Figure 1 (spheres, rainbow, N blue to C red):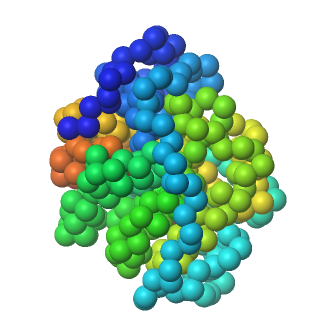
Figure 2: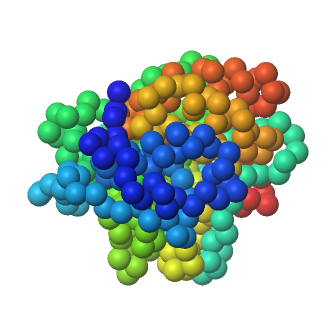
Figure 3: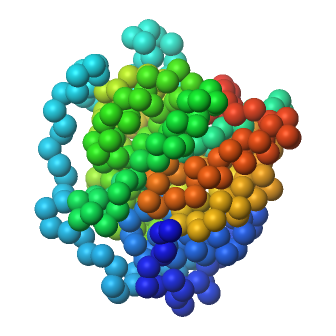
Length: 332
Ligand SMILES: [Zn+2]
């Protein structure tokens, strides 16, 4: 439904290092997802960038369109609280209760893959990517939506807890949907950067953010997301799960926890729901953090996979829970 484009395969495929973590992902799904992300430069990239991955920019990729730079901040949205302005750790409900994921500002954030392997809780996490190229796809009419409402409706109907890693540009594109997420007491909100740029030199061909802009980008995203209230957190996920010491150091002032995940669904650019379900159910364990996407056009099978995932979790005695409950206090 969302073919990766003309560059379905390429020489870079030969150079993909497969780490222990991603070895559990079906290779076909992995390659399709990675190639798709590179070809379109418009979407979710599902995997940690191996240090020696050679995913190269391919000619013919949609160019960054003119006039799609940083938009003006959205007008005040009725019903949403006044936005914060500092990007600093907030308190929930105006109390002094610790916000999940908050860490002492000034310390390089820890990176968390999963929670304790005891109990029966797992976290469903959904990334909401939005790049300038994706916005161009929307405005040109090539793509209908990057907000998969069928996923949200299912989670609401079945009363399933979930955590959403939102890019600032996605929030600005979908304020109504964001408000809907924020008002659900079972949903937690987290940070996935402002415009889904790469925070390492080599991250699936995503355009790179300059080091000097990293801190402000993530702080700005906290401000954009926190304006909607609800279950705010200081959890943060890098685009493509790509991070290095430089990127982590840049985020030290923000007092956050980096969350990767230990179950990579491979849902971006999937053409069938089955490999997604297989990847999730093959890897999931108590404490798992499952990485999925709510970006519809770039992850069009996720809503079809989700009922099967929920059924499979139930069969295994595993229960979806908000990320903060899965990670627990040791996961900040
Ligand atoms: Zn992403």
